[in-house]
Image (cartoon, rainbow, N blue to C red; front, side):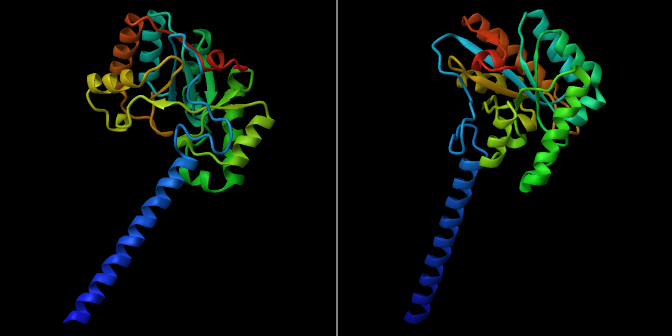
Length: 248
């Protein structure tokens, strides 16, 4: 009986070791390749170093109607300019929305063409997807975006170096609410986002979902609450290129 107990303990210890090691590896991998804040592979700014009460509001995965236009209409009513990281396929679907954003003075960044995660696992496919996304925007607005945010913030040294060689600034940010994909109550999303804001923060919301669109009504409502609250607190808004002092 004692030998069986010892064997069971040894197996349990080995299993715990495997689980702990695997969890540590996953955590390290996330921090290196997908964390908003990691700078291990090079400059990937998530905020600016400033004491000025300024915030750069940004949106990923659009354009996605009618929600992108609803956000744009509200921002126009508050004289707020933001940065929209757009998926090439969605730009082709709603070109008039992108053109309206440009007309309103918002900055347009690229967010790949297809927003497919498996493209991130092959540098050649990812590079092709990035270039195709840049071209989709450039063919519409007449100039290449100088800001790029990778889907899921997934990056590696080769991608960051390639972007910088092309004069493109890779950009991270702070997620307004990690639960946004599930569309929780606007008040809850707004509260979590406001709690993360500091001078120089780049705040991330999503006006779409991957390249498929989807309901973002609660995001629209949350953004209204966040903007009005921060304006009351003395913050002002700018685009990411202006915040970082890079070409937009």
